[in-house]
Length: 359
Image (tube, rainbow, N blue to C red):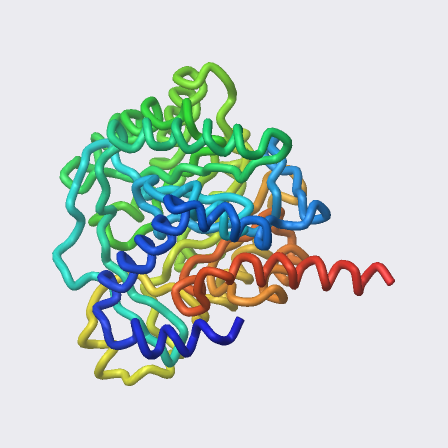
């Protein structure tokens, strides 16, 4: 498990972060194409004791990969072979867009963190939809009993004005819902101008209602719908979103996205300042994301599925979030630092902890 961090330091730490991500993702996909991933999956498949019921679905493990790693659905099967119980694809927008200018992804190695201002770079909903359908069918063939789950995260196209945001989200919902196991409305990225204004409940209510109706109609079934919120919301705003989710009968809330805060970092302040704007993810988000989760749990009880994400690195981090009320947990940033066996390590740690607690 500790071999990869040394490899990362030698092979990737000096490289442009986005280029390193691309090379690493290509390697994972190559393992799948050559059949090595299938062999690997024999070692990484989650233990049956980890199966989790949520959103009307059975997840092989409560631990999954957060949106942002596979933005366009190119590597769903390959990532599933690493042991993730679900893979959340995206963020996907109604129109294809290149994202923000490079460089736009930066590591803070001392903090085990990342700053990104990617800007929802993706091929657009129409191009991604057939990839999702193909991956879902393949996973169903390979796992006729319980297969890895595919979530789809959708956001606003940058050039679309805020007053036209609902129709833009509906383009994505109609295209992607038929192949999605669940759908997430992302209104909390700091990298699309004005997007976080959509977290205001007066704006959020018609957006979520419209997306939910369109997704169900397009899929011909109920597609579980969740909203992803920012850690920078005030406590009253968190409570308001929780009440709105209950009122609209959403299926769940994902807490949390990246933060615009730079507090408590160990990295050189001049370096952090030189990076500029973007969302911070990774270990520094651990405490705040847990606080938001606990507040949501107090507000919604067992009425909604809560998916915890932010600063998750170890099996204990995952267990802490499950104990705090999350049904599912996601990670992403630590994947960059820990390598391809990270999900398997998390799953095995969860099994070990559960066996120990049952003694």
